Amino acid sequence: MAGKNLDPSSSPRALLGAELRVAREAAGLSQAELGEPLFVSGSFIGQLEAGTRRMHIEFARQIDDILSTNGFFVRNCGAAAKSKYPDHFAAAAEAEALAKAIREYAPQLIPGLLQTEAYAREVFRAYQPTAPERVIDELVENRLARAALLSDPTTPLLWCVLDEAVLRRVGENKTVLAEALRHVATLIRSHRVIVQVLPFSAGAHAGLDGSLKLMTFEDAPPLVYVDGIGMGQLFDDPATVGRHTLTYDLLTASALSPRRSLALIESVAEEYERDDHA
Image (cartoon, rainbow, N blue to C red; front, side, top):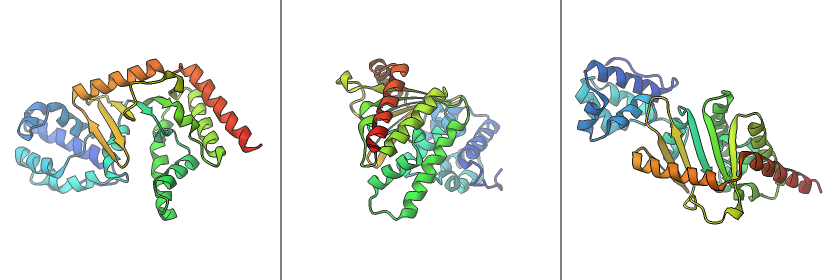
C-alpha cells in the first residue's frame, strides 16, 4: 500500500477510507483503539473509513506513524480533500452522497437537491451579483450534479420540511418559481421524496434558528449539518445529533401533512403561472 497513490477521479475519500480500514485491521486495532491516540472517538474513525468524514493532514500524519504506512495517508490526503464545493459545505455534500436517508428543514430556499436549473441560477446570481457568467455556470452545474442522487428510485430517502416562505419568495419572473415548485410536486407524485410545508399559521416553531440537514448511513454514525451565510458546520456527537433530531421531529409535527402540502405547492405554482400570463 505504501507505494500506491489514489486516483482523485475515483471517489478518493471513499478509497482512502477503505485503505484506512485495511491498514487498521492489519495492525490489529479496533476503531476505538486507533482513535484513542488521536483524541477522537471510534465512531469518528468509522466515519473516516466510510468516507463520510474528511481526513485532515494532521490526522494523516499521526495515522501514518501509528499504522506504519510509510507516508501513504499524508500523500493521499490532498487528493481526498479536493472538492468542487465551498470548504464550509464540502464535507456535508460528500456525506450526503453516501447517506441512506436525508431529512432537511429549509426556511428560505428550495433545498439544493430539489432545485431546477433556472431556480439555482437565480439563487447563485443573487449570492454573487458581480460574478462572471462562467462562475455561475459552474456553480449551477455542480448543484444539478448533486441532484443526480435522486436518479436512484429509492436511496437516499429524502424528507424535506419547507417553510411556507420558500413557496412565497418569488422574484420578478414568477415562472422560475412556478417551474421549481412543479418540479418538487413531480418528485412527490412519483413517490421519490416526502415534502411537508410548515405554514405561516404554525407561528413560532422549533426551527426558527435556521436550516438543518440530518443524514444517516448504513455503516457510520449519523451526522447533522447546520449552515448560515457562507458558513456551515457538521456535527457527529450524539447529544447534538439527538437535539437536532428532536427539532426536526417537532417541525414535522407542526407542518401540514404530505397530502395537504402537495396541494398547497401545486396551488401556489398555479397561482404564479396564472399571474405570469395575465
